[in-house]
Image (tube, rainbow, N blue to C red; front, side):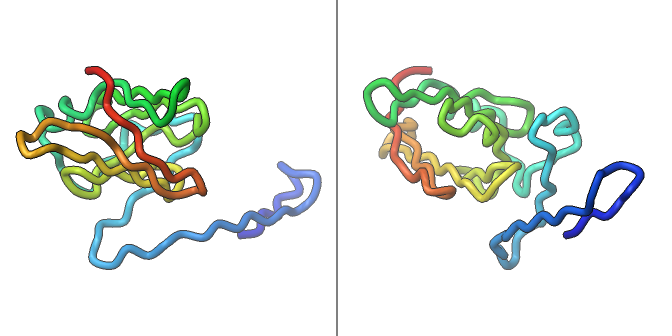
Length: 135
């Protein structure tokens, strides 16, 4: 997309973004990185609040690198210092969540008793597995 508005910008500029097509899914809206207007963002799938609550907690990718997952309405907020803009995630399924900003995906894994054990983060060149430490 090229922006050419001489009243607003000194010169035209072009932005390019590639998005992966996920066939047979609901289209998700992108939100500015400040997330101020995120209240209107809804997930592709409705996940029960009690299920979302099980994902909340602190996860450790490696010693010294932790992420904190909290519930924000129908979405999950993931605070990760290595990806500060990828912090609001909407549901693609009961266990898979997509960043509202990029194509980063977080999937939660559970043991046979249904306890959340870890998350797997893929996308944006920062793939990894983080073990759940606490609630």
